[in-house]
Image (tube, rainbow over the protein chains, first blue to last red):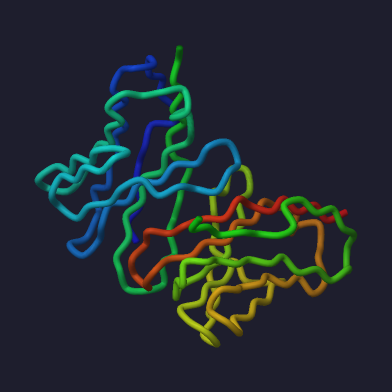
Length: 111
Length: 113
């Protein structure tokens, strides 16, 4: 699986959009981009995933560049409960489901 | 409520004393796995199972055993725990292999003295 690069930490004001970038320049054609988050030692929580089209669900939006070498997770109206470590993961769907979480981005939402 | 449960949530034990961490899911998921999380190392997969009676090693299987006798349960067994197995453990399940949308349990914090 391809590796990803994320900023170590980011701050966001409460109520504003949080835009979390991720670089995955070595992503291959059959690999998806997944986003998870982990709130202080709780189990990771799946957020969203995509292959090449932009995706939106009730939690977030995922914007993937046309060349698929980078993506951005958008939390449209960040709340204090969104403070967490956010992991960008690229993985194919061959069955082992072994997700490489890396170190992620620590997002702090500030009141 | 759809969930993955783990027991115990916290455990302090001594070197060599066999222990089992249970994991159960009520979503009829085929796929289950175990991860450990250590500072600076992220989450690493220990074992996974694609279905009943089908298990395979992940990245760090040494010192662990698993079994999958029924679809809902996937216990993690430490036959002879050692201090380097002190860690935060997570069980996860997924509705299908390859889907990668995994549901994680709340975690088990294990300390081996």
